[in-house]
Length: 429
Image (cartoon, rainbow, N blue to C red):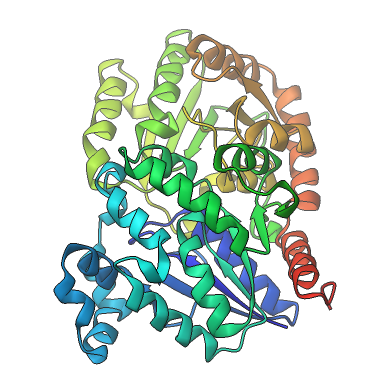
């Protein structure tokens, strides 16, 4: 059984979906499974060895140009191929991950219309390219790509699976009438898919209700990380207590809330440090500058390390240096890959009680939950753990043991292969 897993690149950003998709296919291959990782839109970025194919299907440059003008829908095929080259796409789309969803409504709707949209020619070409790979299963990366399912099925005869990746954040931000049109198309196109895969039980429930998906076709296969990559973190009883943040630097992820809590804790006399890392888009530079100014104004900038975007070795070193981990995101997270990495490293987590976080904390026992968007509750939870070494030790041990058992890449690969086998009728053989 050959699986072609389509991964939507994030225009130069290392994102949780790319990390998970790359690790999933890499582990499937390590287990002897016939799986290919094929980028859509743009090449993917990951902090591990990139196992994706060297070409990009349904390339972002062509997709945008075809939306802008009918002229680009009739380019010679060799020109389209050139526009789909990974190096050119990387150059042209660098920084595009910060694009406001409000500007992308008509494009999203057009892609959801598949061969009937402005990118119809590219959709047919992509389906023909996939047919040459002879897949038994094609896995779409998100609901925005559902419009491609009929063409893929017709060209390949493959079963279609679609990952549910937290796309509600983007789709809810589309302006009307594009938002309503997109939701109608998603509900209609969902019947062209044999199975949908959510990474968390929270998002499975949410997607069924939010997008009117067929409940019986929605499955959960938890995300997984490579546990042996994460050595045990710093001694929970050591000093100073170091709190870490590893996520995109943006208001939605709540870095400002952690900064405010850190400043308050420092004023209370706690011996603590803060380490911040993550992707920074051009549109969020002023946001980061404000947080650093706030820290400087409070006289605690020297207790804070800003590491920027980190590679794999730097990320592992960051997690080893921590006694606490916190991403106080304003919106409900669908995946939480970096939280799983922190738990696997034995770092206790402090998280808002919404989205995927409650099930992760409940399953692992590796952290505490606070009411979302509650500054006093966040400060209080951090203060309680900063002053309780025994509790930090207990959380670290429970979290590391459970994360390695429940959220490993091996468990993830085994679960997804069983599902592929079910939709094909081979029961994962």
